[in-house]
Image (cartoon, rainbow, N blue to C red; front, side):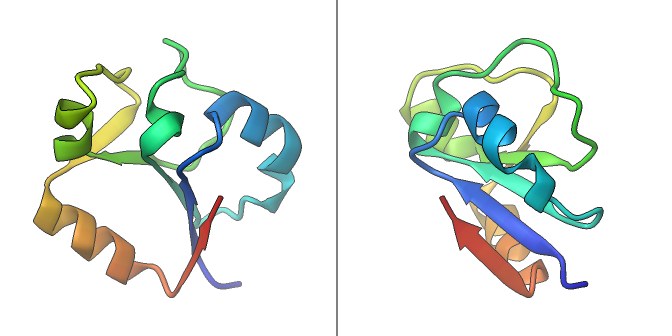
Amino acid sequence: MTATLHWLRNSSLLPWLQQHSHLLGDDDALLLSGEALKELSVTKHSIQQPIFAREREVEILNTTVPDYVMLKSDSEWVELVLSFPQQITW
């Protein structure tokens, strides 16, 4: 199965997980931006997939993210996106 990067832009993480977690494969990952960065719980949800965000976007939005969100620089973000053969934007 092909690894997929699920890019949540206008969906909050918890409601998205409640509705779509069955779509996550073992090698998938989540990338959060926009509205998805604004409503994160302090504790990591029961998923095993990594969760990423762009460091610059977190700064621009003047928000903080929990420790389970791995921040990526702009160049690391490009590498992350290119490392997944398939992306879905939500």
